[in-house]
Length: 309
Image (tube, rainbow, N blue to C red):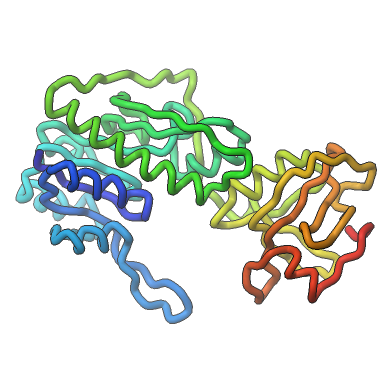
């Protein structure tokens, strides 16, 4: 099948690679413009662009989608289908209507739950035990199209958003190939989403970072896992430093200490009392101006005494 692929970050790469491996003709790839990164602010190409160039596929990076340029490109490429995976842009109706088989999207949640920009993070932040990937027909309303296929996967108790992101990217790649096969054979279903079950996953911001130690240990653990790799959960040390938390685990121990109190600090990490009387262990952190490190390594240069808050 002749396909135009639209995607930008690492999440979209397995979908593109698996469509190519399945023998489909990807006539072009649309992705976001290169962006400056790191200290040198050197322009860096999106991962999807790198993948497409490795396969010799033409890459298009329009700054706008509503000025007629993108539509003209699509009409020239003449795809039968557009496949979208984390493109990061809303497609106008004229683009949705361009290919004969329409447009389908790879979305990293079990729709209608978690429509929006950060479904992987919010599934963990909310303490869900399961998530998945949905392949859907695209519609004008964001993530509201009819469902073609879904596949679910459990979320491990200590799995963070970065780890889950990688797993769902692979799952999405396998699932989109199946959906394209169904579209090609005319057997792809259109399952309407239940409006009563809709929830949203808005963009993340730094306002979500500060840890409130009066909350239950499980909720804080979910916060740390769900805010990786960005913006990361943060806590203020006795020195006044704001530290980022990159790894925690539930110890299963109970304490009568006030929330935020360090109850133990050593080779295993930094154990902190939480609002429900449970203890959460900090395994990995980053102090201002320092590298990310194990909590035990941090303690070698910055001893913390039990009873500190």
